[in-house]
Structures are given as structure tokens and as C-alpha cells.
Length: 201
Image 1: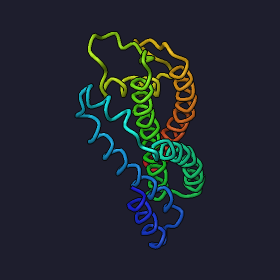
Image 2: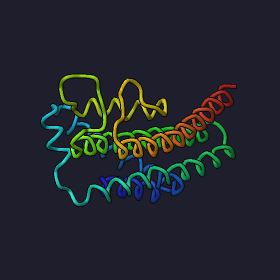
Image 3: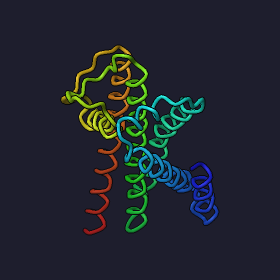
Image 4: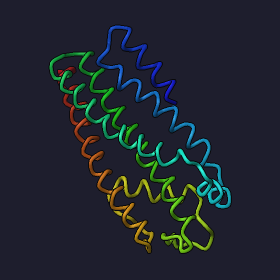
């Protein structure tokens, strides 16, 4: 993931588009990460989910923190690219804004993917689980993705109940971060629409 992103970012920078290098590198790295994670966890049933969620991985927490910080930092790069887009016109402006939209959406996906994994880990480490899915069978990663992406899109839980402090605190952090990224998605989308209108006009 890191190697692919670094290679892509370096290639773009050396091609004479250094301002795009960091975002392109981040986009490639996140695409590799998201593809790898979802191909791995989506087919898992509840039993496989439980085993995977609680397995001992000393690098997991560090990886999650680094990814969350990088995803948040990517918004700064997006802001820089969008600011430069305002100084250009035509295809160049569309390219910059389009890259900004893609970067924000991919960062948004990374955040909720990380929280999908985190909710599964918290649930299966806790005797009480902490989340009531209102179903007789134990949850798999699809159920945890439902919780994570529901919070990501609505900033609240939907038809699930939270019953432990750790889960509630994690949901609060997730909702606040989701609001930040929701604002970023909205801002870049408005910029994209404005750019398309200007170009077509």
C-alpha cells in the first residue's frame, strides 16, 4: 500500500505536476488499502469475523491511527489543490477539482472502513458485545459496516442499540470525524459543480 502510493506520487511529481503528487500518492495508497481490506473481510461469516477481529496484531492500532491522521491531513492537501483550481480555467480546473473530490471520498471511505474494523474488535473483545443488532445470529463484518457507514452518513446510530461506554465513546469520535469529512465532501462537490458550470458556460 505504502510502496504503491509512494511510487505513484513520485511519478506524478517527477512528471512536472508536483502539486498533485501527494494527493495522487494518497489516492493510490487508499485504493490499494480499501481493495485489500474489503476483499478480505466481506466474504467472512460471523465466526470468521470474530476470529479475525480479536487476533493479536501489534501493528493494528498504530496503522489505524496513522491512516486516520493521514486521511484528515489529506483535507489540507485538497484545500490547497482547490485554492489553485480557483486560479485556473477549463480542463485544468476540472482536473484539480475532480482530484479533490476523489481524494475526499477515498479518505471518507478509509475512515469508515477503519471504524468498521474497530467496532468488530470492540464487540468481540467485550463479553456483552456493546451493540444490539436486533437479530438472533452473531454479527459479521457486513453488520459492522452497516453501523459504521450509517454513522458516517447520518452522524448517528440507526436501528442498533449501544450498551457499553467504550462503544459510545468510539461512536462519538466517529460521528465528529464524520461531520468533518461530510463538510469536506460537500465543499468539494460544490466546487466541482461550480467548475463544470463555469467550463460549460
